Image 1 (cartoon, helix red, strand yellow):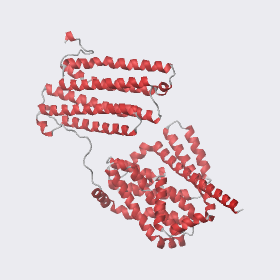
Image 2 (cartoon, rainbow, N blue to C red):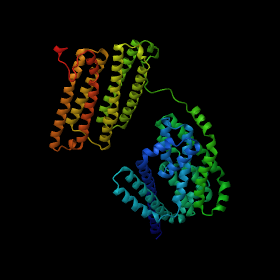
Image 3 (cartoon, helix red, strand yellow):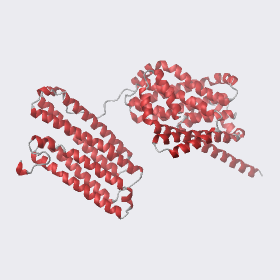
Length: 560
């Protein structure tokens, strides 16, 4: 009989745990749907609004509050703000003000979600599904997703409330929480870990509110758990922006330090504050909710006036590392007074830009062969370097005194500028075209047929050969070599046409790999053809300068 009772208790405890975990997972999924829905519906507008509405620290706080209420996630707001700080679109002080507002916004969201709104859940779910299903545009689908997510959150809170009802009589849970109440440091770490694992302080605070409403935790323990939830909620933003740069890390570390100071202070003072709050609010769930709002409010009031000193302290403790970006190597400012030397320096830098494009082409071929996301990140970094060097070349040539240039120097400056622009366009094609195609291939876990991959590699190899010739034509301005480069247009057309025809033949044979990658294959051919067009165009100004071009076509050898 005793054994049977033990088995029944064990099954009952397991079911309670499953219900709690399922409700918690639904709560987090609802949060995620609200965040992704709002970002997909208003992502660009939201980012633009955050970036522009930061004229002073008070308006920045308001931006943080409203953005967090919209996406139901202070983590999302913090990550967006940190990305702006990393790109110098928002100052460190204004960015920190936005995050303080975001922390306050999530406490306001917790208050509204804690109200008895279970009746609203099915209405929101129904409206969300209808809106999502009947919308043809991203904004409508995003709004529908957000409404559905809010309905799921309210449903999850209702399920969590039902699941915690039997817990109040569980001796094991009461014992664990009793011991946590006697060890506030462990309780703080416990709640911090929960918020970190859930990537949401809001979810943990709402769970503490439910425990308080069920009288499972004391008011003092509720305060400590709320402190831990707020501390744990500052860790995911730091991890998310770690690779964004030192400005983003400064912002995340400062936010973490502010929350840590508040969490430690609340934990230490919980024994003094809890009895007074319990007198005002007999319900422990309300105590937890008020503590969460008070925690964010106190941090906002205390630290908002000191954001300037905090930003300077962060800069002192986390200085800007030595410049690691690729910068121009041959653009000598002292040579600007001598046009011949300046043009030579600009030409050498443009040749280096061509070498960077070659590296980018080779990396994009590796990205198509593999599914490693690090390779695509490397491509993006290379494209940034190309843009930077290209911009510096343009500025350098613009500072070259035009009145001191003769006709030959003016034509050479134009050739250098034209080739640099074409190389920069190639970088854009690779980053926005070939790299995106590689990402699509990896995301869908597709594979080219062996013949298709061989054709793509052959086209890449030919493109790299043409790039080498283009570099030589640009440097030497050799007439015969320029003619040879222009003649490669027919090779490029032939490669594209033959590969497309063979691809269509495989498509008619219904080969699985070919059917799945048909669009990718043809788009890669198109982008490589565009790359070659930019490379071959370097020959035209040289041939025109040497009188080797007719108005519409290349002259024959005996005509020149």
